[in-house]
Amino acid sequence: MDDFKTSLIDKPSEYINTILNTALDDPVLLRVAIRRCRLDCAEAERRIAKLKEDNKEYVPKNDYLALQQTYDELIKSSEQLKQNFRNAKVEYNTLKEKLDHLIKDRDKYFTLCETYRATLTPRPKWERCTSIVERWNELSLGKTSNERVDILLNEIIGGNDIYNNVLHFIGLGFDSKVPTFLQTTASIRNRHFMQRDVSLLIEDIWKQKIEYDSQRQSVETSKSYVKISLVDFVHIYFKQRFPDDELLQLEWGYNLVASCRRFKSYADINLFWNVLLGKIEEKFYYENQVLSVESK
Image 1 (cartoon, rainbow, N blue to C red):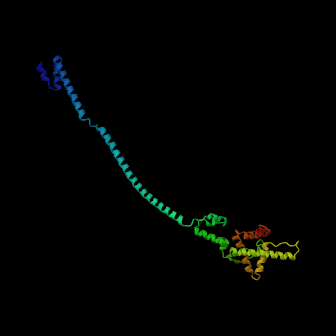
Image 2: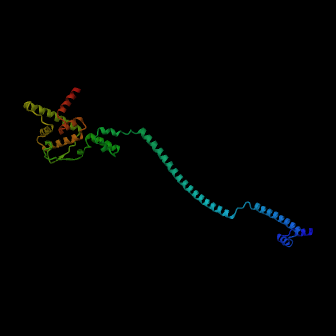
Image 3: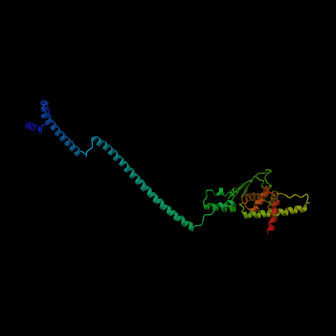
């Protein structure tokens, strides 16, 4: 029996199965076979454990391929992000350079502005001219300071009026609505009267009219006497001043009207102009003269 057991040691399972098939009824053989199976099972478990220990660092091929694909995608995404970062860095450097230039220009112009503020004459308040020049906003729109100074100078000499920029006036004709001292169809020379010239002329016209009215009143009875209107007297005035030159009478008449339009911002000229147009009565001139004398 012991020899039989010894003969089965180190024998493969197939051999043992063959022996078992021939001796299934032998209990001794069965015990030997069971023992042998237990030894083989233990050896198999040991080998499996060893294989697991030896291959614990390895992953399955499917998992490896999936991880490899994910890794490739992440690498590609990383390269795209790196390229975007490089582009953004280039744009940032460009913008930073431009910003540095802008800061330098700002500092330069600020220093220049402060220098000008401290050394140059302050900017004039041009809006104050609107109270003097009626069409100031229209005349000064889009003009430089030098051009605005020219406008003011022209206003002093009447150069901003449309009638002052023409060489000749066009005659108004012989209509009954046209004042007698302006009735003509000829072309009349523009003499470009200055403000002082117009004021002196108006002063003389008033003086001559007062004398004319006094002489007429002394001749006629006070009840029947009616004062001649200023517009009619102007015609008489120019005829008396230039008795032999009708063209000169017309020239002075047209230049008087044009100058009154230009210099109507002056009180004396404006009063004469309104009386001449019939907007106010002549008595306001005399009342104004009385107030002026009393105020002195």
